[in-house]
Image (cartoon, rainbow, N blue to C red; front, side, top):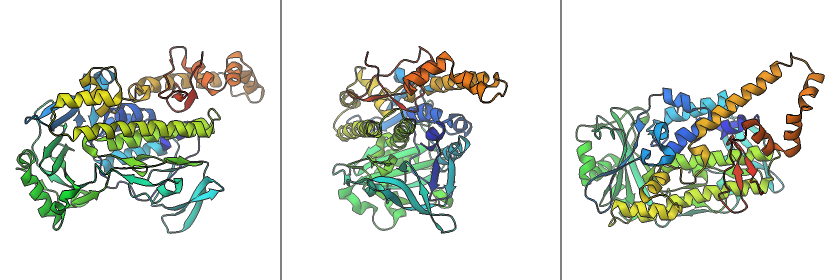
Length: 476
């Protein structure tokens, strides 16, 4: 989010509690994150250089079918060709790339800074109080505060409302890392493998040729299975699941470094009853989280960050009134969360075969596409139909091209001041753009081929052609 706001020329301060690189879970990404949002931020090229394993889809031993079944992102026309893959990532590396990219595009980043509370001005949030790396308490004023501090957020209550936990997904996860585990055959070698067993399900994520993230998600009524010695508990669950036991038969658990600890996470499916108040927004796990079987966590975090950035940019630029921009943010974010939640409830009906799951995906997304394509669109993170999630390369190229044209025009002014800028502003193109507002200006910059998207909700807003703001839909 910081990068997307900074790219519009706004001042951004990122306060990060930890020092990067640092450990984080959530390692299996979706194409919408890589080819959509990361391309918009400018981080995609650095990610491509990092050597992360290519994820082409997912493999499941799930439901009534006793044999594993596989889906490929390339099935969807929205993700065909070079955008039909994602990455399996070590989050310490992935997150550091994103943080450094935010610095590169203009955000000010301060690590080892712990936010204590927000500062209020009447009903509005107007900044934060925090301690810096030396332990000194400081204050930062801001027109908008965004809480992106995750499921352990202390600030989410400051938007009002409450956090509601899912009764259906009251599960616990026990996870660790292994060296030397088996791999699926090509071309699915780096797919995420999800395997259901009597007590819940396992994830098996290849992070390199040898390193694997392995976690068991256990139903709450079986919580006793993860009590006591975590090493013995995890091994007992592995022994209970023949497929995972076989894949880990030649492997050894990592016992040192950032991956040396067996970790537990519980009660991780929830949503807040409100995502914003004047001057403040919640994104990512600070707002909501749902069962991770389809790797939706990072998608929801990055997607909500893009939505938040659009709202902030359009308000700061005077294009859209704050209430409308924030309502658009929350409506789209809740829609994305709800689609995953509703589908996952049906996905846990183990008596079904995969074709039933495909049909359910078509139903919850209200798609006109065939069942399998609807399923892949959903689990690939592109069911909303937002162009920025599937064609960010084209948006980025347009922006770069037109920015260069504008820069060249300024250079041709010969470094003049005063009258030179006056001549530029008085030109017919710029006069028309300024007179009709930012939306028309963007259309003039990007050309007639930049078609408007349709509002996702009746009377709602649409993304600007560059994907970085909201604009009002045309009414004619």
